[in-house]
Image 1 (tube, chains in turn blue, cyan):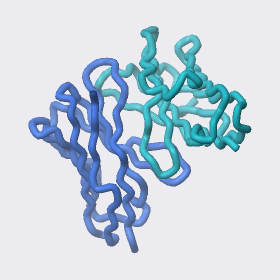
Image 2 (cartoon, rainbow over the protein chains, first blue to last red; image 1 turned 135 degrees about the horizontal axis):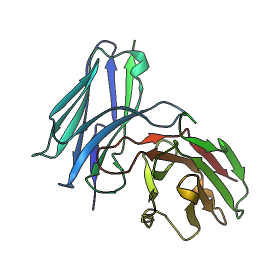
Image 3 (cartoon, rainbow over the protein chains, first blue to last red; image 1 turned 90 degrees about the vertical axis):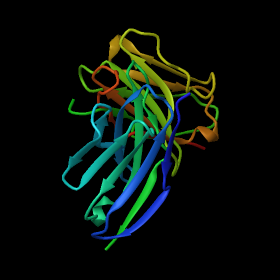
Length: 112
Length: 115
């Protein structure tokens, strides 16, 4: 069955540093990999996604990389700010009409 | 509406009572998901609707849980004879067609507390 492993579970950085969160998946048919940010008391918010036909995608301070051979993808946040503090979830989905499978989440804390 | 709407936002119920949670997806979205999130935990898949296809119910934890989606739009998650372990935030999401490569958007969730 589908499985997504996410590391680390918690990550503390200083403001201005970079943060990297990594996920590994098992379903070779997966072709869509979104990342969600969840702030306290709110629903998860889609922040960036990548499809299997590209290896990297960037949007301002956030970027996602995908290695389909190794079946892993990563979220990179540069120049972190305190408002980046939240729980981040990776997810994957295959080509058909299938559910999104989520990682276990990473709690990011950015200290001023 | 502009986004996925869930109601109520909070629900406190007594152990043994039945509860209904409602989700209004984004207009035109054919795929709808329910997830459960216990305090400080990840997203546990419950059920997935895609158009007129039979729903994927593989995540429902027991036969006390059921869900319907009427007219391909609004969905109701029903929990019968609630137990304290049912206390969690129940999240609904919708996406345009549910195929790989389409974005899913979440509502704010319903926080269920069973006392």
